[in-house]
Amino acid sequence: MPARSSLFSLDQTYGPFDSWMIARGFVPTVMEEKWFIYTESGRLLFRRSWTGMLIYDVEAIWRDDQLYLGQVRVNRDPDQYGETDDEYDRRLLTYLIVVVLLGEHAPFPTKEEPTSEQAALQAWSLAGKASL
Image 1 (tube, rainbow, N blue to C red):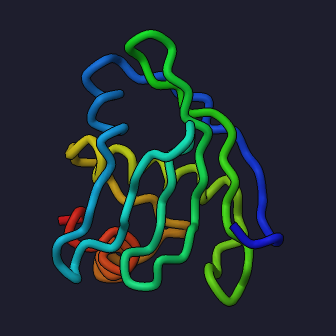
Image 2 (cartoon, rainbow, N blue to C red):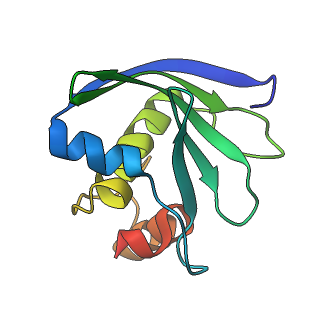
């Protein structure tokens, strides 16, 4: 994680099955899968699959058979990641957990009221195949 970063709290606890789904992570197998997500040393790490840039570093603590996701450090190096809004990153990170790791459908979090075409392009560029 670069020195330029930001902190916020996710403060989410997941049930046993969802915890297992999250902890197993996600390894991309095709170009259309935009994230490499894995656990390491009590952290849930989100890297862009093409560049390897670390975008989200999430505290991941097991409490019996439930996974607690706490403090998030988000990359704020403008050469690596252009987003600057912590609240938007909280919504995007939650979306990635739900869609990529849990395999559920969720509406893509947009910053403003885009056209449906703009929203689809944003979802594809940030979540790739998982956004379908």
